Length: 116
Image 1 (tube, rainbow, N blue to C red):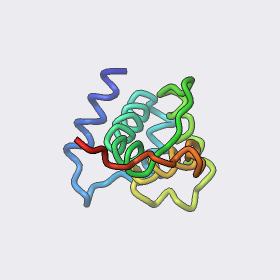
Image 2 (cartoon, rainbow, N blue to C red):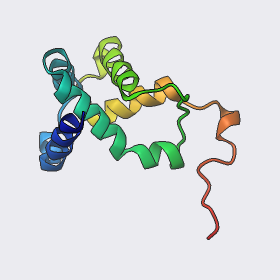
Image 3 (cartoon, rainbow, N blue to C red):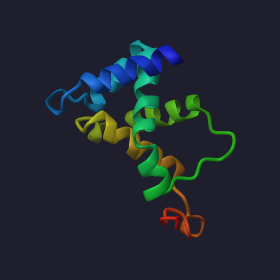
């Protein structure tokens, strides 16, 4: 798993906005190269972790694994062909948000700045 994450970080770091991977390309990688796909998903989710957890919370249960997140993203790509032309990083966040969105009651008090 460390190799997949490293590959994703290198790939994300070397990509310019003009070379951004689309959802179609990510879907193709997921069908042919699990490690690359998984590394991209984990890397993308990690990049947006702060935004998803602090600014606009998501609710993961204790049993959520990276493999489950991987499956959520792959399923999202399959179920939303109309969105596949979008940037793959964006699609990862949309998939996670759809699958793990917090109910309004769970968000109360989260994402607020803490006094130091």
